[in-house]
Amino acid sequence: MAIQISSLFFSSLTVFIFFFFSSLEKSFAFEATREDTESNNLHLLHLNSLLPSSSCSSSIKGSKRKGSLEVVHKYGPCSQQNDGERKVTDSDILNLDKERVKYIHSRISKELGGDDSVKELDSATLPAKSGSLIGSGNYFVVVGLGTPKRDLSLIFDTGSDLTWTQCQPCARSCYEQQDPIFDPSKSRTYANITCTSTLCTQLSSATGNDPGCSASTKACIYGIQYGDQSFSVGYFSRERLTVTTTDVIDNFLFGCGQNNQGLFGGSAGLIGLGRHPISFVQQTASKYNKIFSYCLPSTSSSTGHLTFGGGAYRKLLYTPFSTISRGSSFYGLDIVSITVSGAKLSLTPSLFSSGGAIIDSGTVITRLPPTAYAALRSAFRQGMSKYPSAPELSILDTCYDLSAYKVISIPKINFVFGGSVTVELQPQGILYVASTKQVCLAFAANGDDSDVTIFGNVQQRTLEVVYDLGNGKIGFGAGGCK
Image 1 (cartoon, one colour):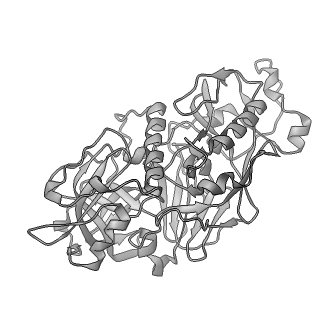
Image 2 (cartoon, one colour):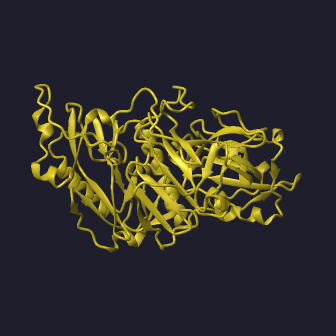
């Protein structure tokens, strides 16, 4: 599900290879050897490219594709939700990311459910903790709901299925959001799903909670609770959804929340892009052919896109979705190996297959088996040995003080997926930047080698990521936000 992400990352895909002879520059900033440069094992870049701008700049060049929405970072200057009052630290982001990972691991191992189920709207008293939606709801898009339509900013999440938004009259509780809260009584196309409908029964597998039934109206009641115990409870309904000016979805199933608690960063709710039948992807299968793609922007001061349906993509490399069962929502990957500075890490072939792997737009930091992370960290530290170290940052234990440098060189990291597909991570997919004095390797270890590996959203930055459910494959391409 959805998402926090640091606002301090690389602002360009351009790899800068140049010679700078100013006396102010430390000579060992250019210690990349001729062999490293010629073998293309290092990224050379300006330190300034780590930092976002104070103003918004669109990453998308030319006209948008049909069925495409702009993706915005909710805490950056491109977001109308960024009112300057919501202060989120990097430690907050990373600590909440841990909660999302715990939630995913629990959900996959079928440890959620039981006492957490919601039986009735009037009796729902689920606890809430301060925090963001499953720790990391960072990227959102704006869609229209109702007739006449009301624009709503929704977090998008490949790890969730149910789309929901807060609704008037907020019978129990609504958190603060930037957009006006949706009022179904003012829409000509709104209707509740009855609790006797077969559609209502689908909620159990989609949310992990059995649906309830309103005693007075016989309306179907959904309840969904996330890893940080934030939750939404309300009426399972159908409504007109406006994706773009030309793309309108009638009778779209969604949750109309009447009891919502947790800090959701001002967003109005969530759009679920998982694999379940009630997800957006499956509900719009006849229109978009179960295909969607996105590019997450390089920094919080730029924009990306979320696009539904096929299109004229740049050169993509496709890998099949993993055949290892990871639940009905998650998208599985087959990770074969990892290379650092052109050298393949010495790992057993079964390391990633034992726990399996998924790709998730809502998890910030990629989680690796401890054995794999230790090998990657060792190789990365060796390649960064010329730079002074910095204190650890929450779950990130390999950090550097780069404040004295104008140009840096970092080891390249490639992931090899099933089908011999090699995906080169861009610089902003390798480093997490709290400040120029604390630049960290953006990977962390799972608790055990048997835990599912999660390919997180930092590693996906600036890549075109294409989900083709009909053909059972996922594609990766460079320069996705342009």
